[in-house]
Length: 141
Image (cartoon, rainbow, N blue to C red):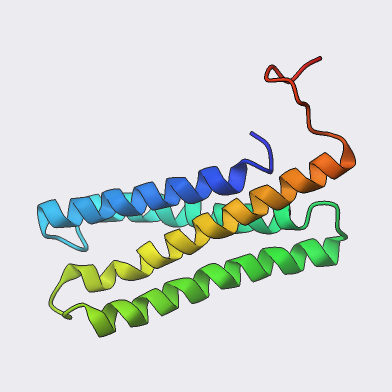
């Protein structure tokens, strides 16, 4: 897996795990149950990996300070998206519903997918400009 693919794969993995967590909560009715916890932590790890990989992909070909800044920026974007999702979830969804506590993960996941797709496109564009992308489907000549 390349740096171009990693952000999108990690973001989609986070979204899938957060969706499964929501299903587990809906089925069991326990927002803090074992099933929800087992799915939350790997989802959170995948979200962090997606944000870091997106920052690295966006910083491909740039100096270390720029790459570090982009990684921190992508992590900040994910955190702000989760905070905005939390505020929106609590304002829109009745507080008695477990959904209010999950909206932040859904919003963060959606933002990470968009960020990862943009990073993937940028990394692909950088490798095309550098002449490192193979046009063969087998990866060889």
